[in-house]
Image 1 (cartoon, rainbow, N blue to C red):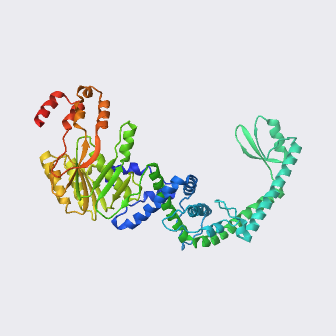
Image 2: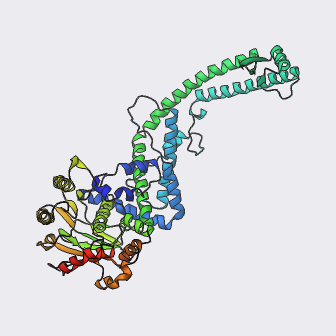
Image 3: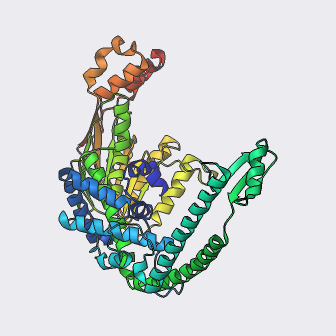
Length: 530
């Protein structure tokens, strides 16, 4: 994630988009933004996500089932058809579990007409290979159905275990009768203080000492010769079992590797579906819309929401006003009062574009915008090369201009870190220069010169009505928290387009007075301003 993305709080917004399973999480981690050349791919992704949004709203049980199936689709090691080593038992289990839930996803997608990035391959035949007993369960084990040899070894092993159990039971019964202990066990731990019982058991011939310490003695039932023979037979059969299982695994590996391409493809498709399903759920929960992606160099937003600011405002009991704006010119300048939301407006535009670049539903009533090759926002928190804020801004600007393709440039109080006279000259010159660059510019400033340039669309935050400031002592006597809340309620954050050459009214001094700046400091400034 770039520094611009972090400044725009994209990490906060994207953290709300939570895929169901690890494949979707991996897909999210590898996200790359769509560029102008990818417009067809982006539109196709949005088409799928739009349907998933409708599906999430209308099919509650289907939504829950899809989420459950996707959560169980775990990553499987990529299978190389030419790899010589056989699959391990745990790999067969992982593959079967994935295939089981992949088929669940495929069948549910067919049922609800869900379109995936590519056609999800039918892995039902591969599942039958991994489920020869037809139990239709995701768990894998090497059944005797796989081979005659394996089946015989498993049967012999089972019979030998049963015979050994029978001999052990008979031996234990004999020991119980001989020692007159009704609740006798195959292994007993006795205190050394029980000298009579310890001596009796030691002399019986039915038990042998398996462990002892300073306090206790552990006795284990001593095996008869027949029991020993059965134990040796079990050990031999265990070796035969390993050999038989290895042969089955080798044969099974050949069959599974024949499905390697479809198996790998299914993982990619399910990863994409999981991510797109997460985007759709985010879109529904946040009341988002699918934007219109076009090739024009203009951005039109209707009632857009800056989600981090929106959530913060609501948590403080403050009013939040949605943003509507039409950036139909190449160079756009936004002016307005302090605390008027200019920075929020810039970040909102950046957030909406960034979400669209990932084909994520956008939080607004409607949106029309293009894709860009790059985006740059000048206000970041980096401490690059021990530079001052102004020097860092210039260095970052030069790096942005070195990028190729079409860009979105967001300038928030550009050059405010130097003296006002030169800062205003630089801010205006930058906009003049950007007219020759393939980019769309949205610039917020307090300087007058940038807004007076030719071929520049000038906008303003509508701000606070003049008569609102006439409340006088009632306002200045309120505590700071109440004054801030009243300012928020009075501020009209609507963006209006200004006629060429007209500057917005200024209200910094009046706001400073309301926020508590001493009257003896403010009064001379107001007289001078008038």
